[in-house]
Structure formats: C-alpha cells, structure tokens
Image (cartoon, rainbow, N blue to C red):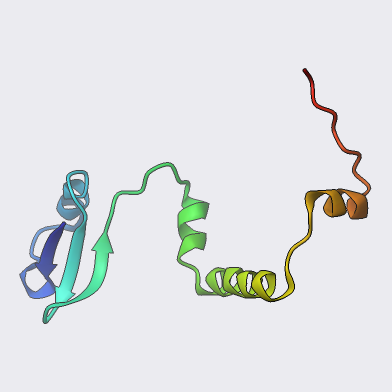
Length: 91
C-alpha cells in the first residue's frame, strides 16, 4: 500500500487512479489517513454509492442489532407469511 501526504500530492487525480491498479493509495495529513484510493472490482455504481452512504449504513446496523437481539425468521416462516409454496428439489 502506498501512502501519500496531501501536501505532496501534486499529480493529477487520473494519475493516482491509474496507480491503484498496482496498489491502494492512502492520502494522509500530518501522518493520519484522510482518504484512500482503491480499485473497485465486481461492483456497479449503485453498490459503491450505497456502501458509503451513512443512512444505508445506519439501516444495516439497526437491522443487525435487531437480528442479534430478537433473532431472525426461518425461510419456512417467511414463505408461510408470504404465501409462497416450498419448491421441490429435482433429483
């Protein structure tokens, strides 16, 4: 992983974006990381946008906490509630 102090970041964003093909680039200010350029693989724009959206992250965290505290629902129960018949397996 390459680190780069923001004061020394004089190349164009395009140049840094090309360099992440080799390794991530972490931008620092006074030694503390403030941003990272990493390659995006196997994801579309919607996935990348949601993964960093604070409201979406909060929603996922609330769901995880509720799951931990209250437990979950089995697939059979979900199908029953939705009125979906169980599929039979082909052999």
